[in-house]
Image (cartoon, rainbow, N blue to C red; front, side, top):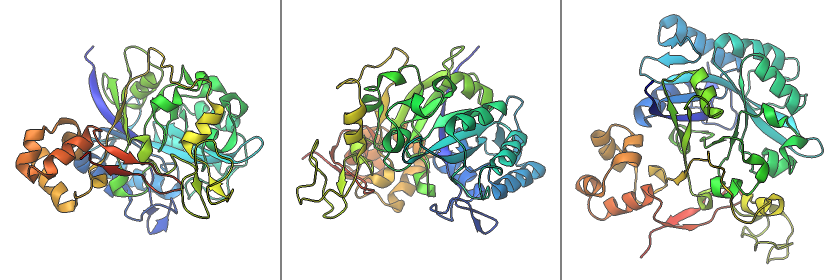
Length: 390
């Protein structure tokens, strides 16, 4: 048995299908065909989940691509595109918390038949199954059961964010909302990393994922995962999430939490970040968007992370579009040499970068790719910024 490393982003939205919206807040450039091309050829990913694959228009497009032979079913789940990308179909579903707020969950499926059957059930608890991320009039435990009944995988989405995150918006313990043993993976989300999440002891046995939650083409692969698998298919990824038979998630890649849009608590009146532990902003206002870091400070069990033996490293990596001075022309120069962004981020040496973009921009790209920069933290929906050490 020979294992290989594959790269996956399991949370990519579809902006529209057949001229109609799917994920209302996503770019209309996020069409199925563009996603399948961009994910593989531009980003260099091996496997993705179309998290709106259950939606009516998207399922129709997948069926068309299957009939055309552009997608081919895999015997153990998933579909292989002609360019080599493997695709899973998913749903992002919103469910109310037991006392307050609402959270998003991901339901992944390895076949169009399973996705279609799930959509039939979803139509009994949701008003419009053609749209993504709609509220379902059910509870999260029922959603888990309906997902698993169809052979799917159940993922807690962007767990710590103030908008639609289980911990960030609803409860302080998983068991207050979901069946702990029925969680196949937990997505850290923008503004959190392993060092932060492993301060919550109940997460010790759960596999973490770092996915992009892409709402536009350039954001695909902003966060992603390295998995060790024998081959890519749905059942191999299931084994990886449960760390069985030598499979596993071996690295999580993503932005430094400081760069996340919801890292610190943000004042809605003056636009400044709150002091840690404060009851109000320095301006006197109490109107805020609670930051992930600040929320974790109230629910964490430990002040420092305690990593279980199976926990892989979280690698801080800054996408090219986040680097000051790097525009599309520079990216195209790099792509002509390296082929895709994954190769640039993972394999480009300082010497190579200097030769392609010069000895001023080259070191900055290299520093950014390896997390050797300083940060101005983000909050309230505004990304943080990177600064290069002087």
